[in-house]
Image 1 (cartoon, one colour):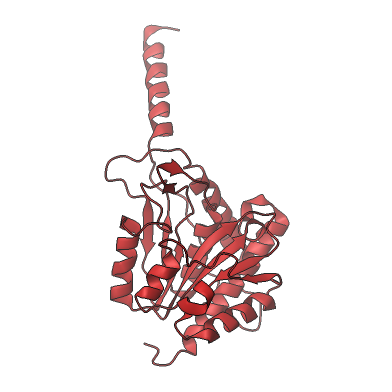
Image 2 (cartoon, rainbow, N blue to C red):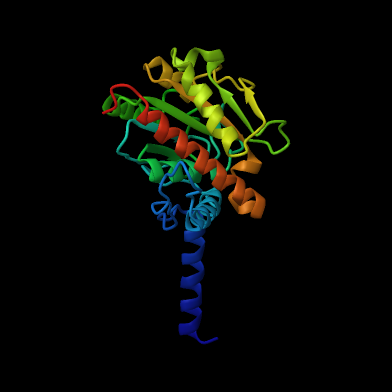
Length: 271
């Protein structure tokens, strides 16, 4: 190897090493814009699922990547309707000084897909941040959510999480024992109906009630926004795992998108 080639090789090696250790610009995105809500037919396009798979893999690859100073660790996608979808554990949170497991980037992909299809505002983590938004209130994620709530005055919020695939439910719905619904019990019954219509049959209530610690659901409800925490079995929110998982994901996108649109349409004083 001559001197010039050696220099070029060394430069490439150093650049590759830096790229592996530093957050990179997000260049993979979910594309569900062509999926239009329909009450009569299946509407989730293949492109929506395939792009969700690419996005899931990309965000999952951020595990262990350290942030630069002032590097953003979450994103907000502003919507056009007064509904908020949150995915605070798409990456590993920091709790009590230690990294915990993430719920998987499929939760973020799901949030974005629902947002694109319905117009809901979405907030989700993209890198491993300095806090746990579902455990602490003093972090930038909660600050941004607070601003969203003040500006948007949402009709309701859905907080998406992932559960271990061995869990004996498809989805557990946490409502703080009903308190986070703020009297809007129809939100829970309508959500269950939409989930069951798409084959989500094993539905648990308040196994994870969202009542402990400073959860997103508690945070929103204390600000007069009805909220539900969805603990989703990983078999329904891991589209990259394979055919049946990808189909379950598409059914979940369909169920939650229909729920958001129909619930909002039936909401009084819709603005």
